[in-house]
Length: 145
Image (cartoon, rainbow, N blue to C red; front, side):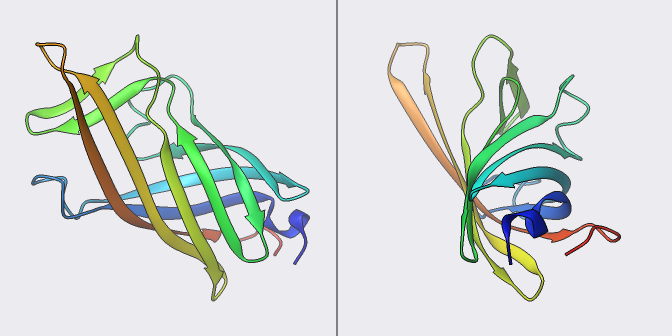
């Protein structure tokens, strides 16, 4: 397949991994991804059911597609994170980078995502959290493949 066949709207779902606390652990979130691919380089925008209510603009996507392997980084308009007491939004901080990787199998992309969050605590010491999960996406019905 050529780059042009992968361009367009994709719909999918990501799932939070076991290192997250309840009720986030195992939670499934639907998303839409609109991508353009030129010479294997991906650019696009992503909206998801969880973040749409909190941001005025979609997340950005940048990455690459080589053969049937996709990898991209998703960045929201600013920082947000799930915590034990709920979601935490810090509009003055940049978004974390959520790294997606996967394979094109059976007419869909599927793989894993990872996010690494590093923040300074009240004492100025850096703490870090790594989150993982699964994801998949299929070309939207009606889009040519």
